Structures are given as C-alpha cells and as structure tokens.
Length: 209
Figure 1 (cartoon, one colour):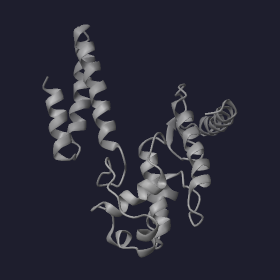
Figure 2 (tube, one colour; figure 1 turned 60 degrees about the horizontal axis):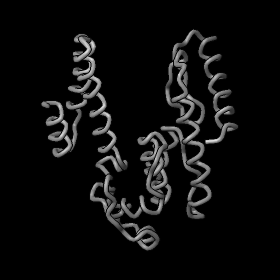
Figure 3 (cartoon, rainbow, N blue to C red; figure 1 turned 45 degrees about the vertical axis):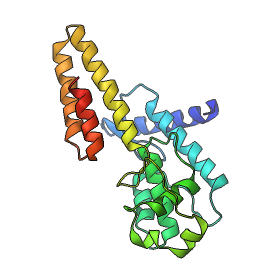
C-alpha cells in the first residue's frame, strides 16, 4: 500500500466526513466501496480497507481474462453482476463479493476461485454447467469456500472468536466483570448465527473452556 494511495484515500474520506457533518449526519459512505462508517472514527481502518480494495481492483485488471469487466467494489455493483444473465459476469461478481467478505485482504487468484466455484455444490447450476467456463476453468476443489461462495469466512470467524474469548478471560482476571459479561454476550450472539455443524461445535468447545 503506497503512501500516495493512502493520502489520496484519506482526502476522499475527509470530503465524505465534511459532507456528512454539514448534513448533521453521524455516518457516511466510504468512497468507492460505499461501506458505512462513523465520521467520528479516527482510526485508519476504513481508509486502509478502501486502499486494499483499490489495489485489488488494479491487480485484477492486470491478471483477469480479457473478457472480464472491471472488478466491482460497492455492494450494489457486486450484486448487479451476480444477478447478471451472463455467467462470466456473474463469476466476477461472486469473486468480488468473496474479496469484500475478506475485507479485500488475502484471497485466492481469480482463476483458482472460479475453478473452485465450478466444483462447489452450492454454486448455481447454470454456472456449474456453463461450457465456456468449464473449458477455461476446469473444476477443482477449493478449501474454505462456504455456502455463500465466499472464501475463508470460517477461518476468520474462528480467529475472531478466539480473540474475543481471550479478551473476555483477560477482563475477568482483571476484575472487569461487567465488561467480561458484555464480551461473553457478543460471543454468544456469534454462536446463534447459522454456522456449519463442525464450526459451531468447535466454537462451543472453545467457549466452554
């Protein structure tokens, strides 16, 4: 991530903050990705996420097949591509959604992801049976692909939950019972989300320790 890119994105964010503040709004939409953020958030996390998205957008243009459109960055543009009647455009949308779910961080290459889609039982049949895609991307199992066709979500949930559990234990040891109880409530809410059976069992075992 270059300093020039970060400065450019920070300036774009500042413009969004000024507009929201003028309209007496507490939240604004991030440039390019349209993700909602608090204008009072002083961390660089939202800006860094947009930088990663722009970097991935540029990288995709250099490595994607000639027929592929530009990688969409906003949720609305991503969903439009997924709903496209063209299977080729749809797989670009699925790829973008998977990247966005990972906060535009580490992700399999487009060719590996599409090969994984074509081998995944949860992928729409019209895409799995597309002769052009099958010829260009021979189906190959991709570990970490879930029902939503996003990659790596399970591992991120596990890691996040582990960190929350460590935080709860630390606060409890420090006598911060109220904060620890609040953290436990967050963890329990995560467990209420519909997860695959093995993941749910693993998180339950961590919580019971």
